[in-house]
Image (cartoon, rainbow, N blue to C red):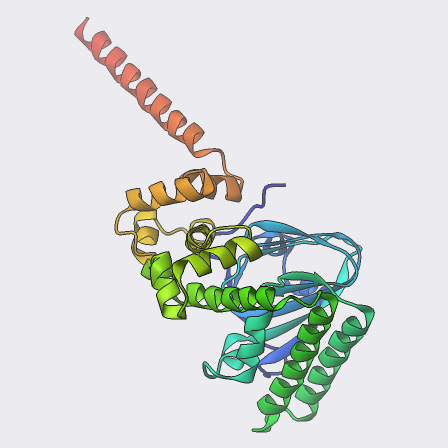
Length: 323
């Protein structure tokens, strides 16, 4: 199914009780948003943890569909493109968190634990973890109502969210096999590399630049990427930049020239060349495909045909006038 989107669907967050975090039942999301809005691709300015408790289907994150079943937790970070694909039997609870609440400073514990969870965008929680999530949602709502307006309320809510995320991280860690010493080192390299790519992907650093900044040999970094991700370090850098291009191309009405400038390509032709090399399609075709439009080439051919027909009509009219 090709998603239909409303361009620039950047979604903000304002809780019903004024707190910077809120638990929202899926039914309320259905009630407050139109069917067209919920079916559109959204570009949130907040972070959302959505636990599906009933039904089956899929949820699209950054243009990739993820299967949904009871117990699936979807993590949507601010800036991630996502799309609900809800059937009537699907139910769940979303924990919505303002980005300012998560990122008060670069070294906040909440921010650090979230960085450990970034790669688990769609996971199946154990029954115990599901109960913990629902208990955390209930406690956050109770505290937000009981202590509304109190200066210390954000600290209490942040601690509740932090405790759940730490427990979630430990729960995930318990399901993974303990890596060897060599494997653990590669995982550490990858964690540091991902963080640095996220921070500097617009700077067009080479693999050597990243390796130098991290204190590793370029060969060591490349081997770690191949072992953990099955991709080269260069491919991971390109993929992150291409993802940002996808987000802007699909979610905005900006021209390719404006997007190329924003992403530091200089000219639209450079963006098109890069995008085609990494994704196998042009930016214009990707935008048209994702929005469910008539293909760009068809529209171009229609315009050309219209101009040809108009030119023929003008020519015929002039011929009639000279007779």
